Image (cartoon, rainbow, N blue to C red; front, side, top):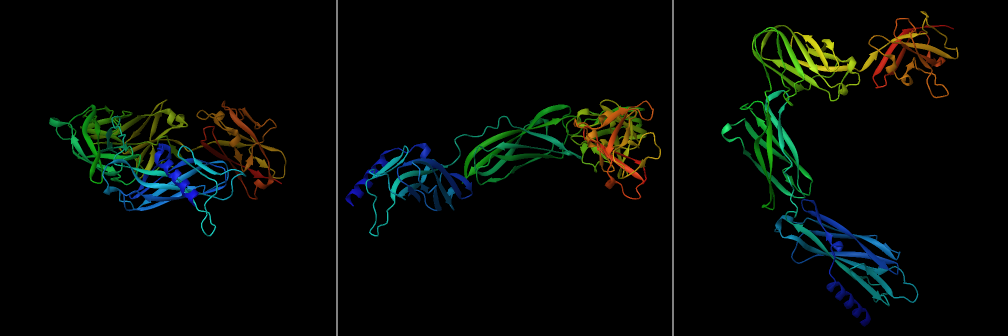
Length: 526
């Protein structure tokens, strides 16, 4: 027993005098309002199969809360192993402590005991790399002959009270107010701001910047979340302007106000940051004077874009014409929208007579088939095709009233199909082997070279694929109209033909995935 005590004293001296490196600290982080957790990895070297266990206890300066700890793996048989040591604190009254920086709140104590003997002729030896070591010629046992675990090393458990050392930088951020679609008197804008690891309650204030220029409306703000209970990367700051008064026009990027944000924890100020609030003051309407004809280009109310031109046959009383992006009813049947989908809600306070011509410029790259676009106008609860002209990047239509407009392209294209070209009867013998020729006719506004022949199906039959993996199709003018047609050979299958069938439908798609479809009459023969 004297040998055992002297050895234990030697180990204790080594632990007290050897500084604990940062790598061997267990640094806790906030995982909830009153919970902390953290861990690290230590390397142990041992010459015997060993069991590891741990105990955690708080230091006298900190009370309250429940402490838990773990070590994994708990059993080591190899000469060297990495142990994961973890500590958790629950129900800890963190806000009761002052901002005192990094403090040790507990001690993590690591123990070891053998599962088997060391090699013949060697003492028991175990080392925590860079921390402590233990050597015993005979492992102590109690009066019942059970081995007694030995204290191997102590690791400080540390938590940083108060704000992080690195504060977030908001200098590159700003809140840009934009009009709310459908309501030109309301503006809002949001920005996601970094927290830099801060926790606590968020509060703020707005400082108006226009001074003698006057007020542009009523400003308010919202911070989400308002309370950060554990470390988060960002929070959302939003500013809203109600009852907009256009004291300026045609001026861009005016600093309207500054949003000051405070983050407090435990009643003490942790950080004060600020973010500028900007808005643009474009003329969100086009003056529309009396006259005949009258052409105006109103800016879009959200971006100021001037892609819409409105021409009135006659304006009898002047007013203002506006354009805004809206969320109108769904697209017309059998049509699809561009990317992104855009509706144009055009309105005017002017009094006019006659017709109105609406022209909208577009980016051809936002559509699959820009040469097949249509301009629709929403009238009496339904979409009406009002297209009168289409150029490379502008589409026009004529209407008698104003409301939402939308540019669409066909969701599918109807095609003219001729089964067994040159035969008006189109006889089909379900039992006949081989192929059935089917032509898709081209025209002035349809180029059959745009068709993906691998996508085609006629009455459920597939196009024949040759040994070189090409489909058996050809380009030729089968009806002599001067336009090239696509003729494909479909492999006959008796299961595709049902008694009483009088027509066969063809489906497929263009190379850009736009669907096509058509049908032709048939007559089933024995």
